[in-house]
Length: 261
Image 1 (cartoon, rainbow, N blue to C red):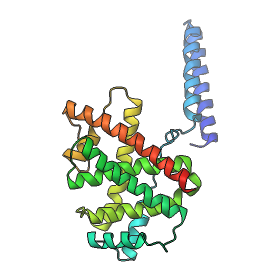
Image 2 (cartoon, rainbow, N blue to C red):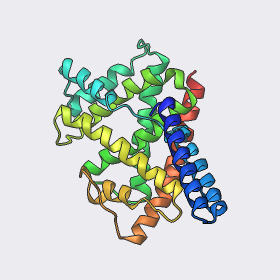
Image 3 (tube, rainbow, N blue to C red):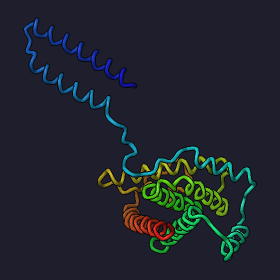
Image 4 (cartoon, one colour):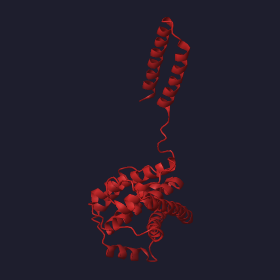
């Protein structure tokens, strides 16, 4: 609703309120109590109509639904479907001394490695992931990584994100995730939103332990809507470990950026 529409709404409500107050006074009723309540109602109405939208004002990343799809299209256009052998060959080429990379490429590739290493830490400190759960954990870590990059280097974020998401798509192919190229883009979008909402709930709701994340990693990987897990002991241990790993991951990304730029 535009500002003019909001003002008209307020004027109409005030007019109706004043008319109702006049009728109450004419009928001999107590109008002051009504007037006080009506004033409070008007205050909250104005506050509601003119409040700023701060739904994404907590520093968390706002992922455009089109961005992973752009990367998916890039993969499709270049006919890229990497096998594990091809990934190994690419790594060998990337390690050659004569290779030159932009700072965006370096941050993208090195931060992706940090995300992969964090999955390894989770498995060593908690328990092994199923293969599909491994990809879930990589998506979760990617959300933390991209959020951190956007927060501290927004001017470099777009280029870094595009390269990073390309790595993420290739990793899905390497892990042989059972989705076609279009489904992968949709799934990554959905999971970014899902994990972001779960992290918000844990931050804003005391006692919320994020058991849906545990379910997505270990019990129902790749499911459209992971359920709550009722294994309280596993949930609590998982929460403690994943919180520590996430904090360390963010610090590693910050250090990487400071050392690269």
